[in-house]
Image (cartoon, rainbow, N blue to C red; front, top):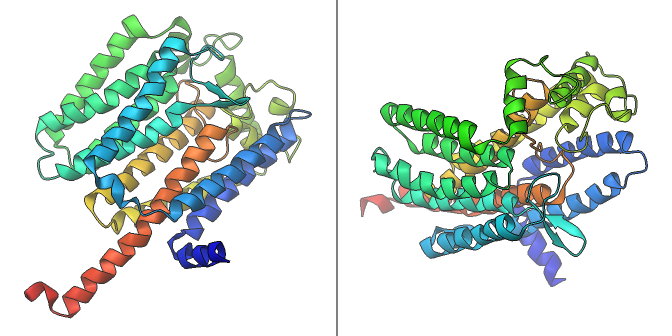
Length: 381
């Protein structure tokens, strides 16, 4: 009875619209997995991950996250989750060529998914304390070092797709923090320099081939360009209304690789067509709109910047995944939030939404107090 009263008391902090949109995207992914997986247990496993993700969402929505404003807490979280990345590089076991996984009780966990959230917390804390001085270029460098450590540790696994997401999170939060145009030009120049260095000394041959295939998609459709070619076929063959659930030949006959993770958008588009694509875009639009609303009423700069960081995190995953599946970007291996198979990213994404719901609860209280003081003449005393 006590737990029920606690739940009823805290339901005001739950953003039901955002949660409903996320669950609808999960349903889109489940339908695609069920129609394509055959005897694979992906569908039932994904339901378990979604249930755990929703439980995480509600747990996070009932937490008062103001303790994250403490510098030592943010630094401790950042340092604590960097350690698993270091251990993965040194001791990790490669799965499909990348040391990204930690085996716990028969399940594989990707620490990088939670490191992304921790990086958002660290950057939000850093920029919230220095928002007035952000035009000083040293803050761009220092914040870049926070992200750069994570970027390097992920890139050497090698997980270049995850490293790109980290860069986009940092770059987006820098833009939201108010970087000057001059400094933006310097950052872009540094980015081009880093890319050149990676091309010469960091990229593996298969990663270079993916970029070359992006420049010329038909150069090797039977080899390194196969995945991108099959993905564009799947998306295009869906036409207006799709082939129907269970009738997607590219994914059903396994021409489309990794249909449950890296190319689930293509598999979904083949069966649902342009109408299905519009539905997916609309659902993501709802989530992004709700996040912007939470950012607009943040109790402090920290909450606002954290919300914008989550927007960069989810938006980068969405844009990269869709761009790759439609042949607009090189194949790097990225999941799409809430739809792709996997437990780590599902739990991390629901955790992020739950934290935003929790922050919006005390943000509303803070704004009510502000209005009360204004109308009572509290600011004139």
